[in-house]
Length: 365
Ligand SMILES: Cc1cc2nc3c(=O)[nH]c(=O)nc-3n(C[C@H](O)[C@H](O)[C@H](O)COP(=O)(O)OP(=O)(O)OC[C@H]3O[C@@H](n4cnc5c(N)ncnc54)[C@H](O)[C@@H]3O)c2cc1C
Image 1: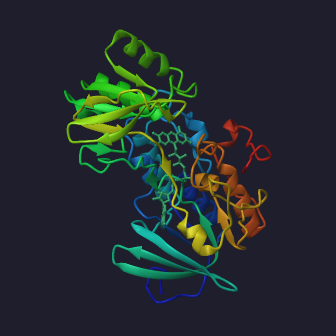
Image 2 (image 1 turned 135 degrees about the vertical axis):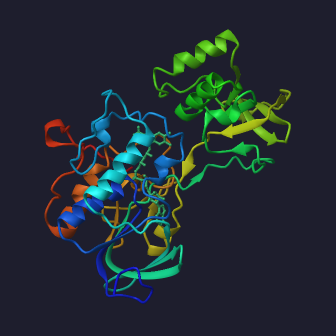
Image 3 (image 1 turned 90 degrees about the horizontal axis):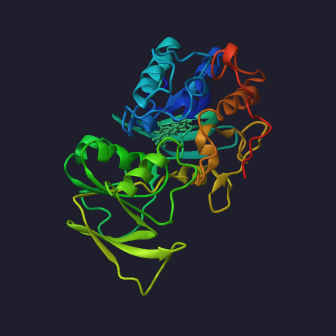
């Protein structure tokens, strides 16, 4: 019987939830250690990397996002795009012949005395698995941070920046002030859109990539891109957006709202994780960011046998993006050691290009 069949098989050693880069790196390590595991992915592998424009460059350099000791080579020695990285991940899955149950979503986890029972929804219907250990490698970008304002669900409003071409010779209002907002604003303007940007603060964050911040400021100064500093959208209609002037995030009552006519609205307000599987399994979620409680040495949560790997370890909301691919390789090391007693053969890039893994510097709080 295969593990894909719907009758309940005997427990496997590990079930991995999520096939982003860290889930895949863990699968390679478990396969190399001859651990009996099942890997379930709600969409296609690398899904989180697939929904931003494919030709967007990673800000991490390529050796930092390489996994399982397989180098990333290209013909320009610069940062790679999301498209390049998806091809790399497909190559990893093929090279190590990993079996990923894609388009299968884990919908519930239940802890029993000696194992977990896991329910999924696949393309062919519900399935049940049992496993001694579960690793959550489910990322932290399940859904957008909603503004909860009227009109946010209109068809010309999106939280996902898909393709600058969409906005050619159209009016676009971008809302936000971090990397994604600044990059989308510049790219859509260069693609021929008439772009305005609204941000709740006076100035864009210092953490915006240094090569794009001055570029945007220059366009604003030239008047080619319109900037509405210290404003928040309070209503979206099919024709315009109502922007409320604010001071330190608080509405200025006496200030008149700004009516900005636009064809499209891109809300780059960040994303958050769905923490319901953690709740079902009995994991303690700490602080308003709902960080799963886990041991730094092993990545095991307060629920014995349930581990966290990758960006999901940061909880529901990464307000300052502290966990990335490059500082999550060490999660794989810790989990494989905890489960098998031995470290994995290789994580990250090839040994000759290793950089310090910030094991002791990792701060879960
Ligand atoms: C524009 C942009 C640029 C970025 N640039 C960088 C960069 O330069 N460097 C960097 O390190 N990071 C970057 N990131 C973030 C990067 O996407 C994450 O760091 C990386 O994807 C995290 O890997 P992960 O394996 O922890 O989780 P993810 O890649 O998010 O993988 C989690 C997987 O779990 C699946 N999943 C979720 N719930 C379930 C479920 N219930 N059942 C089954 N499967 C489930 C998801 O479909 C997903 O495929 C960028 C993100 C964006 C949007």
